[in-house]
Image (cartoon, rainbow, N blue to C red; front, side, top):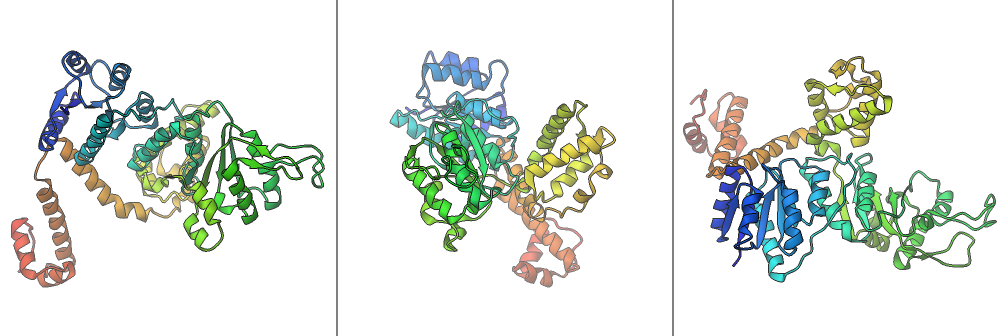
Length: 467
């Protein structure tokens, strides 16, 4: 018989799970701590476990380790309000089936539970494991949580990875994390920016050359492919690679063999390729600027690294990290950002992404006169930055999603009616304000009837409207 165990010290969350699982016809038993659940193992074993990480007494991660040691086939879904890469890594390392950040969408959690139940039926244990990784990959944003999950799932794979993302968004950090969390972690990780090396030198940089193969080749030189044998080669800005070198790269990806420049003997290597680009490679293929067969060779697993303007909730923690890092380098006391500066940072486009934020934090550590950084301390070029219109246009949607998640966790019901009423009230109020309370004009702008506007004014108790 299928049964789901839920561990959380928050009574309201246990209530939400009880209601949701009951509605889904899934038997459920809830526990407020790990000791209760461990004792219950003397009587039965569940099909799936959903566990919080931070609870009184033993943590959810320790509980996960104990259960996996004795019952390796039970899928365990870890949830936490304190989501970062280390937490995700630790969860996957211990064998978690999935990792969910709070607040969550209960319907999506039910989907994950059903997926775990399917795994239980097949008696398969396909959980991913990770080892501890880079602290500077910080991310509370949902888009970064997806990146963390991808790193975890790739830990047992040697698949070629294509990273998409703007310049400065942290693609090399993600590539390094994939390497460090793989079976190749004890072998070299070598990064090369294909756009930063002149075309005539790039071939020798990648494949090496024999002594005397061209003017200036006074010694044999191993290329990056040989140097990274057994490990990972990160090819940044792959979209800028010349066509003739794309052909050579395709050959290596196909059979793992290549020739040094001027060489007669083929060289066999075992190298995992992680490529990255800020370009739209599909468009480059259409414009015949990038080989289609190479694109498909690279595009085995694709990860999108979000720009900083799409993850502004990470700016405070990233700023603290970079300010502390710079302070440690300079052996001074770390500085902090005032509330006004943080709000201003959230409004910027950050065209240089995380790298730009790091540079700004280093500049402030060196140049800011006080320990608490205020607006006047900012560099002049940052004050002229354009406002993040993309972020502001999506802010209401993100706020709505967060508010809805909180209501779900709190066990609230009739949420559709509640939120629709709020949206309708705001739309009608603001439109009436714009039309100076002319209902017919407001109805035309909203695309609804005048009688509907009149009715909604009464239903939603909208004041200051004129007949």
